[in-house]
Image (cartoon, rainbow, N blue to C red; front, top):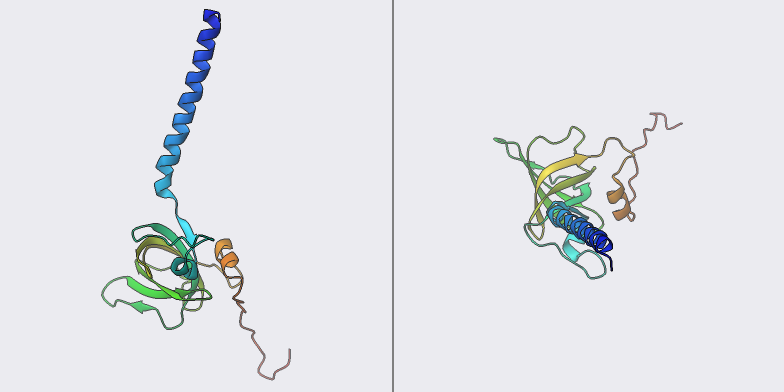
Amino acid sequence: MQPRRQKRLLAIVLIVGLVTAAVGAMLYALQQNIDLFYTPTQLIEGLGKDKVIPQPGQRLRIGGMVVDGSVKRDPNTLKVQFDVVDTGPSVTIIYQGILPDLFREGQGIVAQGILQDSRTIIASEVLAKHDEEYMPPEVAEAMKGIKHVPPVNKPANGSY
């Protein structure tokens, strides 16, 4: 092989190696920032066909409906605790901060935070849906079995 071709081949191999190393380093760094989405049932029973259950300390996002009567507010701080449910068991979310204006019982939310134990999440962010018809795509897909029917305003005389 000619020396000129050897230099070109070496340069190409070196460039491919550096690009591969850079992509590998980026994926490794981003691995710590991946937040998987769960429903309360998936969080407790496991996700996928292997039934993988997240470990305490793992960052995640969870979505579901706020259980009626479950919102407990600390009168001295902004700490709020509430339960979220889909079609199965409920999960407790603890949040320190101001909740969105549209947050209320019986409405869909998505919370992002850290799993404290198998049924408790310390949330760093809580998102509420913005109108009666909207639901985040992940929550809508996971909650296909639940039908959310908006209330119907009937006239006093019963006619439409």
